[in-house]
Image (tube, rainbow, N blue to C red; front, top):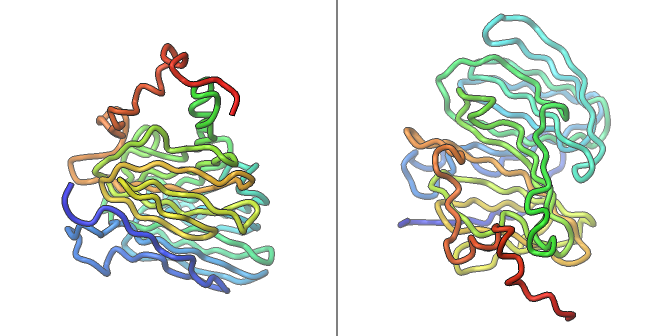
Length: 284
């Protein structure tokens, strides 16, 4: 696990239009700090439009607002138009349009302050375009029934190798309840990952555990992780949302069936329901 293992990126000044947070072309592909994903935030006013094309796989996830999306299916050639809306990151499951390289996508905002996350990565494979909605999102209360609920969180997985075998991405969201932990117990994986944070209320904060360090994170900040043990916690009183995206590596995809994540052996016991009596239950 040599080289750079984590990078914190400050909150961008998101006015209108597209603001790039990381571009995979800025570093050599094999560089230890290359996320291998181009990531940015698209913010549009009412009636604003934005077009996407190019030779990259794309995932366009709605954070808030209402948009009309137009795209063509990369296998059938059928033109499709859909309207999607999201009012809350914290209480509503996501919509995400996922397309292969070469597919033109047209975005038109139908409301003020529409915001979308855009993830792009090189991928020569062809696959059918698909609009993931709340009905496709695999939501779970991970950690429930253990650790006196101190690491119970909502994990939403949109797609991975199980339902997008030709994608080079894994994409999901986490809702971290105030004062609790998520992405726990600490774990690592060689595939690069990005976390992009939002808080409720917005002046909230949390901490991203990165190896031996704890990095404070705030609203709209991001953390890049490269094969480093990591975990998260939010401050009491503040709910924390984060978008997470992982890039598969050549010959080494991410997923439990491939042996990732790798949990820190020292703390892996906390997942065992039969060992919960080891946890202190006195009053603080």
